[in-house]
Image 1 (cartoon, rainbow, N blue to C red):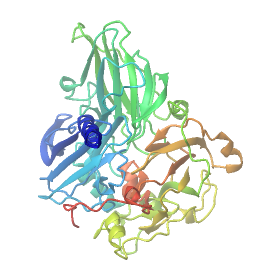
Image 2 (tube, helix red, strand yellow):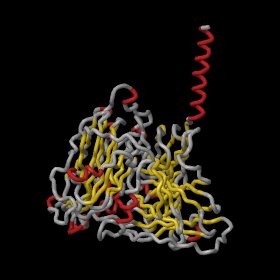
Image 3 (tube, rainbow, N blue to C red):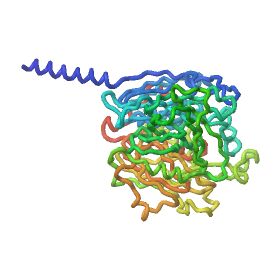
Image 4 (cartoon, rainbow, N blue to C red):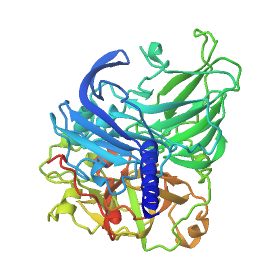
Length: 565
């Protein structure tokens, strides 16, 4: 009897192992970073790519799968790869931001990113996290439901990833390096792209315009990703309704809209039913520009929704897009976002933080010539959170320094609130508030801390819609508004029932957003504006989340092939 019981248990255990091995897979991929000739807008230049592809390869996984991606750097620049939106539970070494969780992969060297997708479904993406290399080094990361599970909506007939990007005729690394030398804003892009192609409205581009075929009556799941370097974008499809069902790999209560707005870093999943007369319809994206008097790329990228059996020579129907400064449309759109089901939002808050975000101006150093101070009125552009302009280390990554107890790399005195309280969104801000202090300041959180952050835009230099991305976490956006956040009247606006779960929040121009999360992932986690020019200027900070109790609440050991600085 005992042996039969033991055999039954062994059989049951082996069956579980067998089933789990079928359900969860380990995927192996090789990314070769290399220079590749790419022709856009009538010109050919060498672009940094993955495996010679622009955009890079789409990775498709199921929830529960493990990814092992070996990155071999054959380019001339240092590089890292960030897996945008992946929770990276206890695997912070695989997160990817340069000098935060790792030193860069030097030319000729390699590093293997190893991590597991846990409890996430939908659309994420990956991109370079060094200099401005993500202008061409990016791709989609599609997370399908775990085997045996399904979408919380009828299965679509087809799925298409649409990755919105920005293209420069010049080398993007040269563009940001020039801006860093001069202290001025970098040159704007020359085109926007959909899946790497500018589309019909640009020179030398119509032959390569992306075409998305559909059959009349069928429903497509469009996975829209804003991979643009510095520009929030509107997106629409002529004469078609879009039903939003997810964002940032979290499901939403479905709602219909004619237009999307995505900040850089954000993703949105929409259902589109081919219910119009069988013709060709433009899909189009153009800038949402909230910063007043700031130059921007005011062009429009297009792809074509092509009903099968329609002649390819017929002119596509053109959509109408909002005006570039249509904040009302953005506000109406963002306020429709609610989680699919009621969720457990932290009600009791242990750390109540208030972060101002915005631009600034550094006075010209006395030893700098005038050509190095080409910001406003002979200054240099900068940016900050809570008046601290974030400076990355160069000899160690922050996570290495934390894990190995290396002193002198960072401090843990990032302020919980701005050093000076002022009229954040007013028009008469003291010039003395324009110049932040520079520092590598982290904010320490105990494991399990329930955190609320008010993200307050400021009108220093100019106000702007800032896409704020938190690495290693999703968070609930419990409220958004305009003006200065006032807890006495704004706390009553909090949605603590079904707020959306995101990894990137578009903080309203001249406004604020409130996010909540539980610090359940130990490590060092960057929070920054996903307009890459702003993170270069210092609009970021990092949380140091301490280990909890036991292995499941402790950061894993550093991998053996972690790059050295």
